[in-house]
Image 1 (cartoon, rainbow, N blue to C red):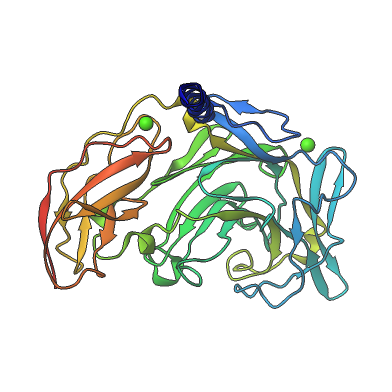
Image 2 (cartoon, helix red, strand yellow):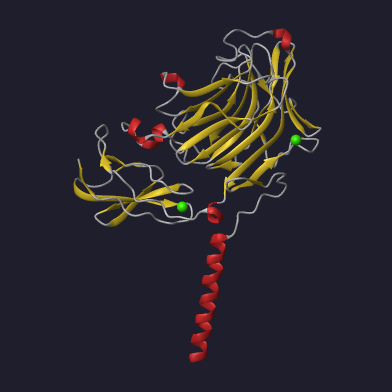
Length: 372
Ligand SMILES: [Ca+2]
Ligand SMILES: [Ca+2]
């Protein structure tokens, strides 16, 4: 009997040790990663170096056809306008009789990411009427149709304004339809003659855009609860769900075609040397628990909404836990949440931050909240 108990004890100790070991094991770089690691704990999770002689359809989908794509675009998307050779993906925008053709490629359901770092080395088309883009759309549109679930434009360029690179985000609260668009732009030398690295670093409450390792303009989009107290956080910042990548050249749309299309410039190409996606290996690098959550308060602009200061952590806060009357109630990915579901009454509320390794910070000082 005693022997069995000791054996069981040893067995549970081994299981415990193995499960602890899992917590410190590095994320393995994806197979075929040419640059498996970047400084700062980034590990390759997906890449395409375009080394074959055809598009790898285990990684990419074609989006086909016409219809304007929401922007009165003129081009017809085909499979034939994307070629792979000499280590490059080339998207060809062509004028064919009375039709423009091009290609639009996505990684939907083949490369979908929540947070991470994307690097695309590319050379852009030139000339009036072209609109190449490297961008991201939500995989499941959990918060509703465009722009409610968000759009991230890592790189856009319109051919009538050569060399000005744009980065934009679109959300319910911030979008160009309402004149509240958030964007950065900067002139980059010779975008159609030389390759540049267009890059995004996406963390829970921020998106940084860089070109050749330097911020594009200010280069930073950031969720700020103080500036968007009037809406649930996802209306300002829906970027806490999975997104996929899109590469395309549009022709003659509401933006790229705003000054018409120069028919004489075609064919035009966007060449892509690689697309690399990295994610942070929090388990390997994370050392500390998040700080104590501070300044929990009730919104003065939105009924039944609370918010607090973003909590510092050495490798970032994954989510917050909200407690009602000392019992766990729900989580929130950012430092704001709605308490609509409580029945009317008065409650004691407190929150704490949880980092990506599950380490928990100290609870905020409690506040009294009355559900109306
Ligand atoms: Ca390549
Ligand atoms: Ca931490």
